[in-house]
Image (cartoon, rainbow, N blue to C red; front, top):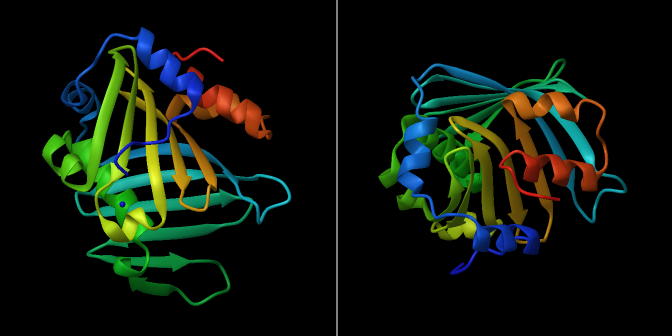
Length: 211
C-alpha cells in the first residue's frame, strides 16, 4: 500500500460537522464488476520539482487481478499490474518488468482499487486502517498503511467521492510529497487547471467540502 492520518485542517473541520458514514456503505456504493475504466488527471508536488507535474490518462481494471494505468500526456506510458509484477512500457524502449515487492506503493494502489471495486471492506482493512465521514452524497475515506514497506513510502491516503463515484485520491508521501489524482467526472473541470491550489479545491469539492 500511522496511528493517525494527517488530514488537512479544512477536511478535519468538515468532518466535525458531517454526519458519520460507515466505510462499508461507501464500499457498497463503489462496488463494480471486474471490468471497469475511468479517466484520471494527476498533479504531483515535490521539492524535487520546480513546478507541479500534471499527468493525464486512464485506469483500466479488466480482470480481478489486473490493473492498467495508461498515461497519454505529457508522455505515453502503460503500466500493467498483474500477478505480483509491474510491467512498464514506453514507445521506443524495451518493456521493464519487476516484482511489486520492489514498489509497495504500486502494490498498495492495486490492492486499493481491487478492494474498492469489489466492495471488499475486509480486504481494504487488512491493508489499511480506514476512517470514514460524510454522507452518501459526499464522503471521505482516510487510509493509513498497515504494511511496513508501504508505510515507509506513504504516510496516508484520502479518498473523496459522492454516491457511487470515487472522484479524487490524495496521497501523502513520507517525504511530504503530495499527489492528487482526479477521477471520472471530476477530470472535466481539471482541463485548464495547473496550480496546486486549484487542484486541491477541485479535490475537496469532489466530496462536497468547502474551500
